[in-house]
Length: 173
Image (cartoon, rainbow, N blue to C red; front, side, top):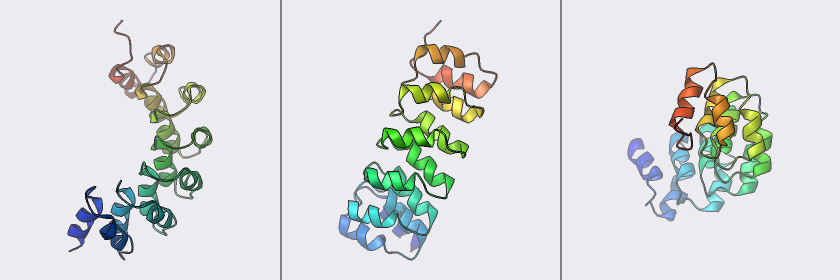
């Protein structure tokens, strides 16, 4: 059954031998389950990062065990959602995050804004982004300085202000 194989592919307790076999499944949603699994061997992640189906590459980019060179390559993927998942990965190299902060795909920029590994200067730039989703990401980021949170607390967009209110670093006053 496909759904059972998908469940096995997603289960972090699945043995690597089973994940290796499932990584060759004809169904892309099975391979995407393997690609996000923290127990998937690195060499399999490298192979899956070249998969023709973008959802598989998306999973690799979200995987905290993906090698940095794979994340760098996937940051240039033609599919915006793959670039977004690279932007969300806390182990993405800082220079890649800086480049993705200028991506035309707004969700890639929003991913950088949410990422706790994003450099401070980049957060400052993203706090001025034209898209509210990006500014909300900065508002929610645990490393956003109080001065930026104070500016964002007066943002025209209610979702950005909500993000500031949710941030545990926002002063009570």
